[in-house]
Amino acid sequence: MVKKFFGLLLALMIFNVSICAAAELVIFHTNDMHSRIQDTDDNKHSIGLAEMAAAVKKSKEKNPATLWLDAGDTFHGMPMITISRGENLVPLLNEAGLDAMTAGNHDFNYGSAQLERLAKKLNFPLLDANVAFKKNGKLLFKPYKIFKLNGIKVGVFGLSTPETAFKTNPKNVTTVEFLNPVDVSKEMIKKLRPKCDVLIALMHVGVDASSEFTSERIARETDGIDLIVDGHSHTALPDGLLVKDTLIVQAGCYEHFLGRATIDVENHKIISKKAELLDAEEIKAIAPKPDKKILDELKIADEKADKLLDEVVAHSDKELSSFRLLVRRNESELGNLAADALRWTAKSDIAIANGGGLRADLPAGDVRKRDTMAIFPFGNTLRVAEIKGSTVREMLEHSVEYYPASFGGFLDVSGMTFSYDPTKPAKHRVEKIFVGGKPLDENKTYTIALADFQTAGGDDYTMLKNLKIIGEYGTFDEILTDYLNQVGMNGIEVGRITRLKEVPVPDAE
Image (cartoon, rainbow, N blue to C red):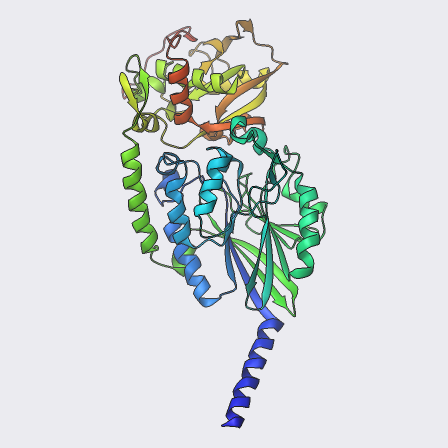
């Protein structure tokens, strides 16, 4: 009996040594979901939270040394979630089994106090080492967590982009400040590196060259971070990006991919690491069926949202049409109202609203939350950017390029007027352009309010992809509500765009 006992003890010791000697750490990662959590979201390009969770849970059953980390911009975006100020997403994330997340700039869209409330309801930590209260310097959230997985000690600390100060409405972050992420990273490395086999920085910082702080810069200017799980720039990095000894991973946006990084550890030292992005089919191969509990939670969230959608949020003096062949071919009052609301919010020189983004009529009288969300169902957020006058002309040429055919990219404008001649060749149709009553100066830099969709090149507005973003606000439905309540509907009559000549409209239209 004694021999058997010592034999078993020896076997266990050998087993434990083998675990410490060589083990595989798997990190699943997501970023910039913007509450696209159903496989029907983003024109069915989103994988779905239930589908992703099923795959991660299945993987954790096979290898307990597995984490799921989310790099932020999670709580804001789609109507089901935004209508509850993020509350409806909490039980879904808890059921999904995330291990940690950090805060993106749009997670502050309901205000820092609401994000604090949401974080307290999560079953996992929201980590952020560089967001502090202005009044006393105390951190809003826990800065880091150390996980012990199969003999591997994994340190994870969080960071938010300092751009949050202007890439959410500034009124949302009046009580907090965003500390230098390079300096904070150095502090975290000094604190955590001696305690950990693997050190991960979970950050919403991004790789956009226009940003002062990027994940690449943090990797270059520090030593000791093994893996950066990144977000913010909506960049898909299929194989990751290696900067010095730091592997940077990011999974695009809107749940188009589930990222997976694999780190092999032997005798407490990393011997290899790799990155990959899994698409919907690859996830189905891991877990053919979505997570049922999350599907059940989605039904509950949908029912809760449905009740809130009937709330009266504004008043409209008259009904405004979103008729497809009106808003995609002609200036419309609804489009003018939308563009005016964007310019008013952004305090910009000009604003644009694309006809294809107007999906429902604005009713006369009481306006309910479901009405504003039906007009703007895509969760688009407002961005403010700098734009040269010559690019404004190029943008307007593209807007009327296809007339008389209907085009989702046809633009209504605010703060400017222009005329065009549809009998002329495409890209040579626009004539007189006035901004603020003065002729357009093609060498001048203006400020423009527009959708995040357009800054990503949506509707083939490639000239808008590299604009310098100087501000970000909430979703279009929220902005329209505020504008109706505080300004109203005066001055939205058509007359900003003049068509100089008429051409036959296709019979089909």
